Image (tube, rainbow, N blue to C red):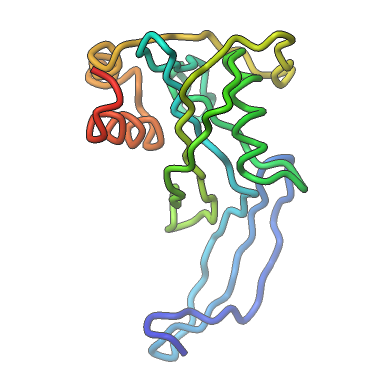
Length: 182
């Protein structure tokens, strides 16, 4: 057994939904004791840092029921069955923003909430954006407003807590550290 590894003894499926499923695992701990872990299973997602030729970053503002408010985020979406992260990133960029790109660069992948969820987000940088000729339709239950902002404007939205999620905060830090926008 690896250091700190918890071995699953039993899994009980609680809920299977469109986006997530919930399970409770009984685990054997490294010291021989047992415990329960409530886990959310997620197919994974992508997030895109879109930068326009004019040097603005493209965000979407949408209502997030879990927070009971609207937030400003970088475009993102979940992986669909049989779809790789690169494909998902291109599709989500177009669906949410109306932009396409030939310049899609993988940045990194990260876990969003490792204490209870297995979701991994794959982050991409999209430059040389062009308006899509025939924009893909977004999800029927998704209502978004596009915001194009300079780095200063984005940082102000972060101070105002309009930008409130980790993937967007990470993206802003990346853009700033790499000098991708002024």
